[in-house]
Amino acid sequence: MRKKVFITGNSQGLGYGLTQAYLERNDTVYGCSRKGCHGLESHELHDYQCDLSKLNDIHQHLDYFLGDLERLDLVILNAGILGEIKDLHETSLDEIYRVFNINVWANKVILDWLHAQAFPVHNIVLMSSGAAVNGNGGWNGYALSKAALNMLTAQYAHEFPDSHLIAFAPGIIHTQMQDYLCNHTDTKKFPSIDTLKQAYGTEHMPSPRTAGQRIAERFERLREFPSGSFIDIRKI
Ligand SMILES: NC(=O)c1ccc[n+]([C@@H]2O[C@H](COP(=O)([O-])OP(=O)(O)OC[C@H]3O[C@@H](n4cnc5c(N)ncnc54)[C@H](OP(=O)(O)O)[C@@H]3O)[C@@H](O)[C@H]2O)c1
Image 1 (tube, helix red, strand yellow):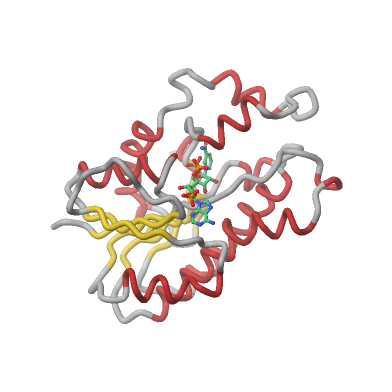
Image 2: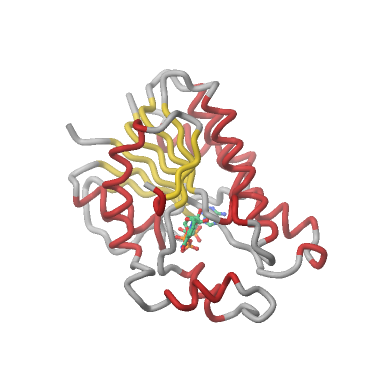
């Protein structure tokens, strides 16, 4: 049966790669982002443009976009922003709020909307990162937000007994996020970026398309792990 997959942040990067992967599997993709998902011709792609940082508007968008569905097989809460790599003491609360709004609170609002629906949701993935647990210097608001996302996943797992939630670190993927990390950060001050630089442009940092296919395969095994877990693709 054709799966129904909802992916946030699918205009570019990993979300775009995952959209390609699920369309190639003959599934139906519902995607949202601000710019829209362009260049993929398919009747099975339903695209919706919205700004997830406007938290108070999200329920209305979802009512309009997904309200008539009878089920969702997979929800991938992928939209995320990095913020600037710099010391935390030089980072304002406003900068951290901006990162948290997308990486954490927009996902909370979407989960609350899903919780209120009569239709079943089989699997929910929240896109996390190794930064949730690594504690490397400079990753400030992003690392805090992904750590919070992991706990958001663990907490909501108790509240979705008929669904299955996983916080998933997808490994490193050649997206705009990595373009910024590998070209515009101070590696002397923040040496963890060196590992990324070494992988940049090599097979160790796959394209979104390759990563999307690999990750879609791994997602078939999600239910081997307890709901609420944090899983890193490099460890499974
Ligand atoms: N790339 C990596 O190596 C890597 C590693 C670990 C984890 N991750 C995680 O994987 C996810 C995807 O990352 P990526 O590298 O693919 O990033 P990316 O290329 O920067 O793409 C981010 C996506 O999020 C969407 N987005 C951002 N702000 C939004 C907003 N206000 N409203 C709606 N959509 C918004 C963007 O769409 P619009 O700009 O069109 O709105 C875009 O489609 C993120 O959660 C990231 O933390 C990535």
